[in-house]
Length: 143
Image 1 (cartoon, rainbow, N blue to C red):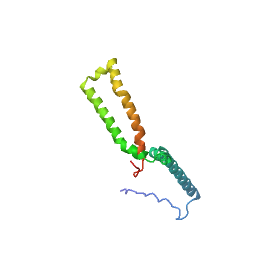
Image 2 (image 1 turned 90 degrees about the vertical axis):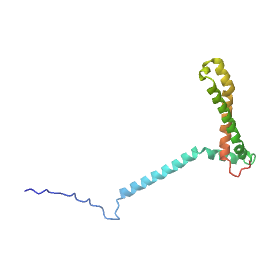
Image 3 (image 1 turned 30 degrees about the horizontal axis):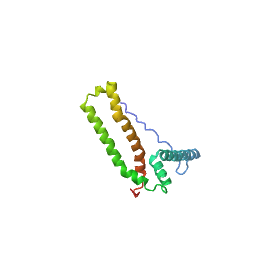
Image 4 (image 1 turned 135 degrees about the vertical axis):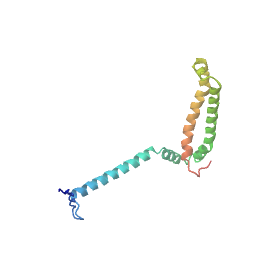
């Protein structure tokens, strides 16, 4: 009769507490320094990408000469958005009422672009300039 033989692995010998090798301490210090550098770089990257902060600085720079500008932008932005959406609704209703394939005709396409193209482009440009200033305006800015 044969009995199974079980062998358990021996436990690794841990260094006595308090005796960390100098290489490990140095490596941990290097990792910590690298992480601190990464955090500093990420903060700089976030600050560089914070568009609202740039517009806030812009408004603050000119607040003496144009103190009401941010509040005025905040007040007129809904009207600009409403005008843009009204124009968009008018465009979509026209396209639904007519055959969109009509736009392949040069005359119809030119008339369509004359009617909507430049106005959409210009209104979108105006909104893209007013919206960041409206968002960057301090809450207590005069309207």
